[in-house]
Image 1 (tube, helix red, strand yellow):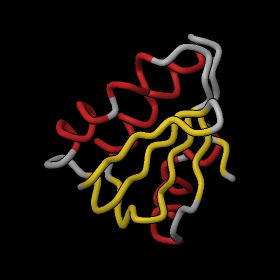
Image 2 (cartoon, rainbow, N blue to C red):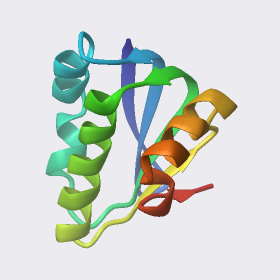
Image 3 (cartoon, rainbow, N blue to C red):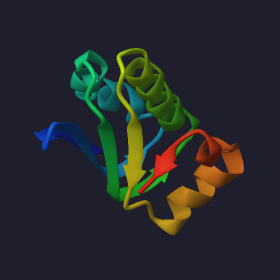
Image 4 (tube, rainbow, N blue to C red):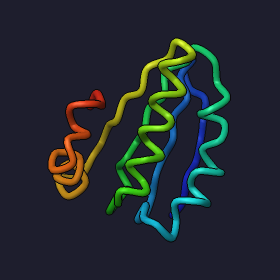
Length: 100
């Protein structure tokens, strides 16, 4: 799992590549630390390269969402594959997050 964080146009963008599951979640969560620390910025998860997400990955997304909202930011998810979108839909997370 590869996670790249960049600031662009006043937003924080997390580019995710690979499989976000129980084995990769701890490392991914550490890589996403800048998202927890930013104030009042929107966060965009670019999931172009994300091939799979488990409940451990969904928990990280939810933690980032709660933290961002508490600091006046919003979280968006874009470029989701059909397979990953299906996981969001089945778990009900598609009702929690905004997709671009």
